[in-house]
Image (cartoon, rainbow, N blue to C red):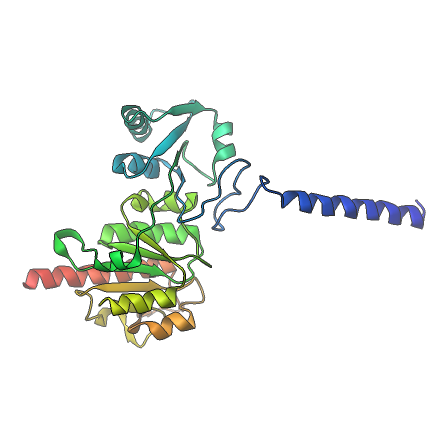
Length: 303
């Protein structure tokens, strides 16, 4: 091939590549979901505008969606030819009782619309999760009149980590979640699956900026405690745990942002006695949530 012909072929290939990129940017093309652990949003699926949660995947997550009954479920899809499974049968029975359409589809079809790598043979489509007002969460008491206990995320972008944090939060008695609108993962299918149904029971507020939200919480009488490896004191000296409190989890790797750190009433760290310099954010969150729970149970027992 001559040099001129070779250049002509390369120019044509470049034009095709550019056209392909432009085509992928058109409305309706495959788009990335919020959260790096989720597969692309398929053609025709809506992109969540708020907290998300409109597609729920995984057996436990779908079952809790139906049991909670807090939002409208449009349909449930179950893959054909699965082994007998008690949870899947519960899902089908619950959906039928609630007059929710149940579609049996091939595994290939289910996987084509799923946005997690392993939907466990079932997914549901529902209304998005409702967004609560931040100051309502600041006043919301827990079981038996326990003071508000909030968990805020500062730049947590991994959906698996957020899901694990939400599951721990629900189990440990957290009464509300605070998520920033930007630079943070919201309630994607991977989050709902990892949270195993916790998203159905945790009120969540979506805030424009976490530093301003912290100021509002402090003005409402909530102690705001940041968790960061550079904290001034250790977690196990958290004396305000039995009062209205909000724990703030920093981003994976980066920790708390400067503005968030400056606005917290205190920043605490977890003692690390081994060679590694940090814990995974979901593990750190589990320790922090249960330290608050432990202190609250101890204070209740003392009274």
